[in-house]
Length: 392
Image (cartoon, rainbow, N blue to C red; front, side):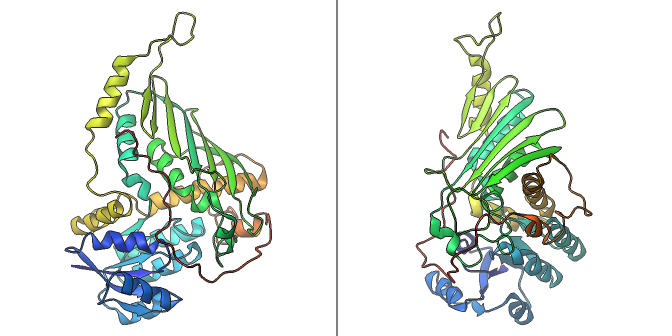
C-alpha cells in the first residue's frame, strides 16, 4: 500500500484528500504538513485520518518519515519547486498542484530532479480527466471535423473582492500572477493537449475589479500555430456565472465542450445552406458517445492515473514536461502583455522571463495589495468551475 504525505492543507487539499480516500485499498495518508499546523489538525479530525502525523514543514516531515511513497504538494505556487525537488531527492514520487512552479527555470529544475531520481512527477490538470474533454479529444482526433482553423477558449471565473485579501494571493512574488496563471491554467493545459503547442503568442492583461491586488483579473490572448490556425483565450475572475467553454472550429465541423457539433454545407455562392451535413454530425456524435466514460474524474481521475503509473512503471498523463508547457504559454502571455510584442515560442533560458523572479520583476503592479488575511474561515472545498459534461 502506498503512503501519502499532503503538504499544504488549505482549501484545495479537500479535493486531494477526498480522492485518496476513494482508493483506500491502494494508498493511505500518513502525514499532513502546514505552516499553520492547526489547519492540518482540522483536516486530520474532519477526515478521520487517525494515523496521520502533523508537521509544520516539509523538511521536518521528510526527515522523520522514511517510508513516504508520494508527496502531494497543495501549497501556494512560490514553494512548489522547492518542496517537489526536496521530495524527489528524498526518493518520493510527487503530485504537484497547478501551476507547476513560479518560473520555467524552476520547471526545468523539477524535471531534472525527477529524471535524476527516477521517480514520478505529475502536475495537476484535472480537467483532462473529465468526460467532456476526454470525449472532445476523441472526436477531434477522429479527423471528422477536418483541419483545425480556430479555437475559442473562455476561462470565465468569478471571485469576490475579498478573494485577494488572503496573504499570498494577488502578489507577483507569492502567487506568480493572477487569473491567467491560477485559473486559466486548466483551460490552457487543455487546449495545448488538444491542439498542440503554438508558435506565437500576443496578449493584453488588465485589472478591472480587484483594487486590492497587484495582479491581473482579466486577460485576452491569441495563439498562432505553425499551420496558421488561431486560438483566442480569455482568462477572467470577473465573469458572473463562470460560463466556461472550448469551441473548436474545423474546416468541416464545429465541436465543443460543453458538447455540440455543427457541420455547415455551402451553397453554390458560398453562403451556408439551411440544412447541415447531418451525416457528418451523426458520425462525430457517434465518436463522442461511443468513447467510454471515465471510471474516475477530476482529481480522483488524476490520482488514479498517478497510482496506475507508479504500479506499471510508466509516465503519468500529465508529467513535468506537460506541466511546463502550460506554464510556458502563460509566461508568453505575460511577456507579450508586458513588452507589447508578439512572443515567439519556445522561451529560452537566456530570456529574463524564463528565470525565477523575472516576470515578477518586470510585471506591472495594478494596485497595492491592501489586506493580508492569514486564513479564511473554510466553507468547504473550492469551486472547480462549471461542469462541462453537459449533453453526455
